[in-house]
Image 1: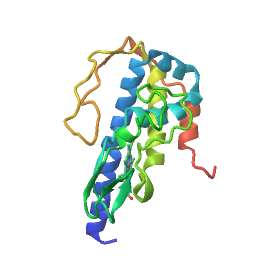
Image 2: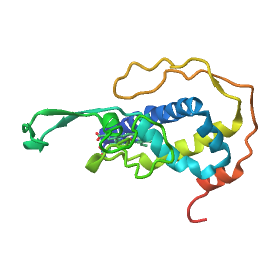
Image 3: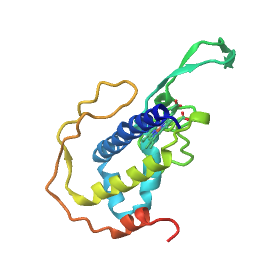
Image 4: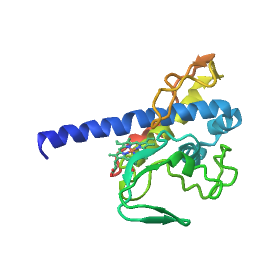
Length: 197
Ligand code: HEM
């Protein structure tokens, strides 16, 4: 790769991979604080985090829409023709709450079956960092659930960053009674141990 390719790839990875994951964790904590029953379950049901993160990506996705597409040819959608070369905006967040696809779409339900959301896009441009983003949220949210003692939202709704594409709070103000010490070495081992060991 040329130096310019390397620099632009680094910028892409930082931009695509940082604020998105920050927002997944912040949107996730906000949603859990609004659903204390699920937050309580997460403390005792470690496996819940896998479907929970998928449901967050459907219900409160960090990327709301993609505006940089155009039709390569005429596209017929239910009798409406989108002409070739028309600009297209894909509203992923709306697709992930499509009532024709998801039952009771505006309900946060980590036990939802068949949860094929659009949180990481779809097709040839499907998110390159999806496995990393999933692991980050799967580690961060249970750690916060275990260690924050009696967390309470100070402001609900929080102030959001003024970005229509990437949705997330500017800050998530939380009151708590204490921070419990980290005890879960099992999670750290599972995540950090190289696969060949
Ligand atoms: C929760 C966190 C994340 C979300 C919600 C997210 C979402 C998305 C979405 C919706 C796309 C599709 C864009 C399109 O079709 O134009 C995408 C693409 C991409 N993402 Fe992520 N992303 C996340 C984390 C990451 C991370 C951690 C990295 C890298 C370390 C990353 C790197 C990329 C790259 C390079 C692409 C472009 C793929 C391509 O065009 O072939 N993303 N992401």
